[in-house]
Image (tube, rainbow over all chains, first blue to last red; front, top):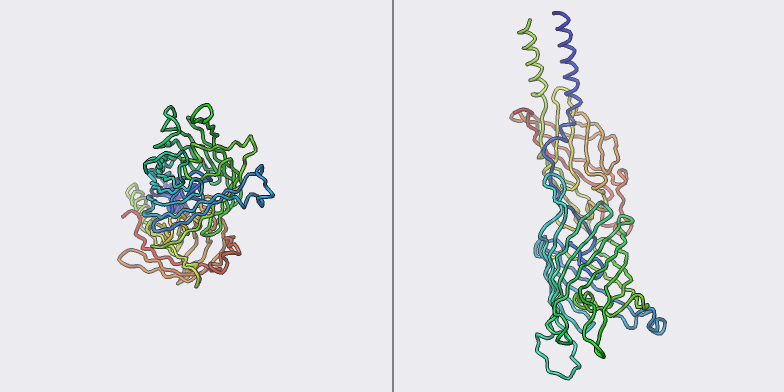
Length: 295
Length: 169
């Protein structure tokens, strides 16, 4: 009996000692909280394409973008392409943490656009984990440039649309990927045989090299790369861009090299006339600035 | 003798559990702002434990649970300053003794011995912990880029408030 007592006493003291050590283990117990994955990308745009990100609620964002002249187009005469730069300005606003609306103006074909972007699904870790984000994006584009075919045109002839489903995943702290199928619709195409709807699949990603610098890239496949035939034939090339993101406080600087110059969605995605293989490569940048207008 | 053993077992069981206090709703906040920029955040999902018999006390918080007024500031806090993916939690593990807590504070993966004033009052069978103290961010390897050095304070003022309830109740 005495031995039993001793055993019980010893085991109890071990038990008590263990309880002491386990005190701090209590901190880690309890339900695992669900966390929304943040900062899949630094900006709301990757290069030309959109990312899954939107500005937060009450945040006004201004983006100015330039695409300079190509290296093969009298590069020095055009002062490193700066003299013939194309420009796009964008102003957009976060109505909620999920909903974003904006307007833009691009110099190629004097295109104005309006867009809406909505985060339908968000990647999460922890208790209620979810593997991917899905953001839906639509833009309507208005061609302001005059038609030079001598015909009268309806206003609707000037409109084109882009609807996209942006699937993305932050693979780890550094690597994030995008797969984004989309459709471009033109109200007016050059000839009756040309498709009004073209389908596109964009692949993109970023890899962080430091806390504030990331390398980015994107490429899109198109269902159609030719409009018209014979003398009026136009050939298009899949857009390819590589770049670097530099983030400093409220700014994101994105510098890149691309075979595209237009910045309104339907033009760079579905009707890009430039081929990198022919030496048509353009330097460009996007610079964003955010202002918190409502807290 | 068997009765005695049983009583001893039961007694020790109750002693162990009755003296531990716990909450998962501790409120933690910090202020690292400057006259140029408000930088404040809080969370109400910190964990805190206290063992009344040994005086041991622990507090832990998930860095991503801190809520800022601005979404972008919250993103930068997690992504650039405290690197929440590498160092998801901050914790304090130490002991309480007469208006002071002493122990190890871990922030951004760096552990430092600290000793700061704190109150721990028994109220309605609960313990209420309150403490406020400053930490120097550079000591925890939290880098502040020179471009924003005048916007961010070199120290963070931290406040903790928690009502710990008896474990097992």
